[in-house]
Length: 350
Image (tube, rainbow, N blue to C red; front, side, top):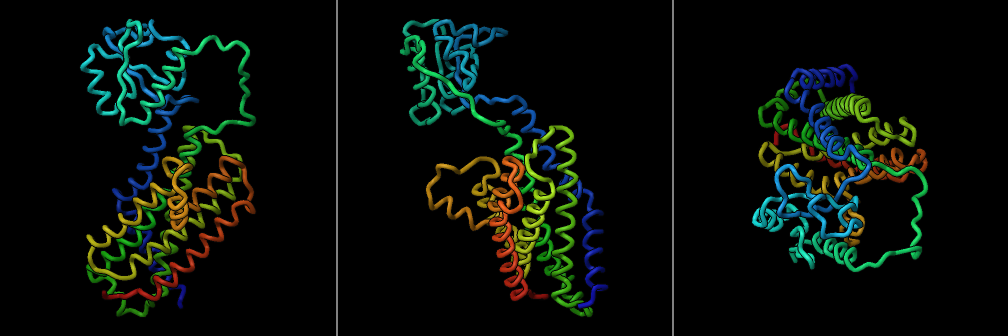
């Protein structure tokens, strides 16, 4: 292997990426938009997961002022947000399409409400409503205790997931789809006629993508942290090492996809088949705690699962490097496997 040839391909791939202004800009803009969007939505310390519709509510009048037939313990509950509608038909339409969880008619005694039997959230809100209507004054029968420690904001939990998702798409599409396109256009065939070896070419692609991924991650992190002030309880160096291990692993997976094939459409289908289950099962957007055991076990076959598990340990729990070493070790084993498979299957022509 000659370093000069590897360096030439490495620099060529980087220049191609930076000169493609649309792709370059989108790699920064996409995670920024997601993080800023969720930052605005969840800018408060508490989000209301349940929505209760109220009718009739005149235009300009708050729904809470129309709920004189409900106990304050229900109407002022922070987990519930009240939505006013002028007519019953408007509220029923939203209820049938699961836009709200329960619909209440203001000013009725007994309280008249509607709920969909197909809505799990509606069943919960109905139970809360019945409990508020039936419960006598609690007196001193209950004693609430505060959670010890600093609570984790949802945006702090979400941030590693968005970074990992952006890394996943950039690694798999930036290597897997691009190399297949090169093979289809005959670029790889021309490179085969040069002294460049397959090992040098794949190594240059791997190093280039890792460099671009980490460069993008640092820029996005600094920009989002400046705007939203993320809380990191662990060391930034440990977090950087976790994402570095994840970028190497997912780029190596991209090399497996890039090893064969000349159809961009087929490569795109394979990438979608891998990316979307990985995104949903790796807890990018929501936790799968409480899911069936087989589903949680199957999620561990994805490298993104281990990246986000380790990143959240460091960022949200202040874990040290030794605490995330199991995840880093798994990522290292996956990387080695992907590299061996990709090198064994790689073809310049087909």
